[in-house]
Length: 161
Image (cartoon, rainbow, N blue to C red):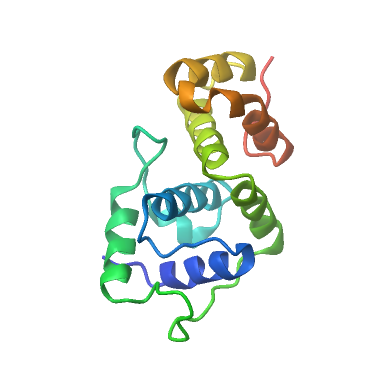
């Protein structure tokens, strides 16, 4: 079932970041998946309706994909649409997501993947989780330290020793 707040969240993210959230390209869909994942990790209630599983490019929500494809088919995610009302996101949460988006899709994938690994393997410390990520995803291995630092700085994970 299409979540009523999703279009507003995506329009807000697009207007605040200048990046596309229209779901028309792979890059845009990855940005949507990882941004909503981070919002969920931050506890933003409308994002918490989506559950995620492992996927080649990090955590992936099939229900979120269904919803943004539905919005795309309804033409609600076209740039410049006035038919969608922006959703207010808390400034602190929005700032964290904006920073992640600014760093690019590889960074978003690395950060979301590390967060997912940390949740799945709470006994592992940051060094081991980063090594695990580098083995799993060599294409984004160079973003692992930066992503871990981002996650710890923004209190999305707790550094274990």
